[in-house]
Length: 268
Image 1 (cartoon, helix red, strand yellow):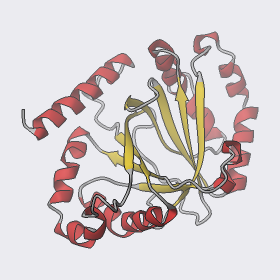
Image 2 (image 1 turned 45 degrees about the vertical axis):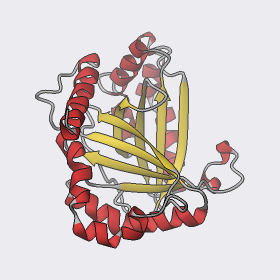
Image 3 (image 1 turned 45 degrees about the horizontal axis):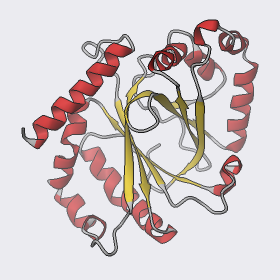
C-alpha cells in the first residue's frame, strides 16, 4: 500500500470509529474540524526560541498556504503555572493545527515538501543535522471537534492574552462518551459561553496518549479575565445543577490544566 493510501485509510477509519462511538455519523457532519495538537521538545531554551521564530515567520504561513488555519503556537511559563511547581519555564512548544477535513491532514506533508518558499526559508531548521537537531522529538494527538463547537475560533487578539489548555481523562470509554454528551447535549458548552469563557476549540481525542480523553482550549484577554470567567462559571445555576446530575457522575478521573502564552506569529 502506498503512503498516501495508508494515511487516507487510517485517518478515515479513526474518524469513522470515534464518530460512531459518540453517536454522530461522520457523513453529513463535514463542518467538524480535525485538530492536531503537537508538543515539541527541545534540548534548551535557545533551541526552543529558534524553532518558535521559524514557526512564526516561516511555518505558519506555509501551513496556511496548505489550507491549515488558524495555527496556534504557545509557550508554557513558570509564572503562569504555579500549580505545576516549575523551577523554570518549560522548553516545550505547543502547536495547534486545524484541518477542515481528513484530506487536508493527509496532504499536509506533501504540500510542505513542494512549497519551495517554505523549504528555502526554513532550510536551517528543516535540514538540521543529527548531531545538532532543531528539536528532540514531538508528540502528536488528533482531536475531532465537538458537534456544537465544530470549528477552531480566534476569540481575541489581545497582546496580553492567556491561553488555557485542559484535558479531561476518563477511566473508561462509556464515561468518556458521557462527558462529551455533557458538553454538547447536557449544556456545559452553553455555561462556558454564558460565563464569558471564550472557546478556541473543544474536541475528543481520536489518537494520542492518555486515552480516552477530551481536550479543549480557551482564550482570555488577560489573567484577570481568566479568573473572572472561572468564577462566573462556578456560580452559574445551570452548572451547579448539571454538575450534580447522576447521568454524568464519574466522567472525569484526571484533569491536566496548562496556561500558555502565544509566541510571535501565532494566529490564536
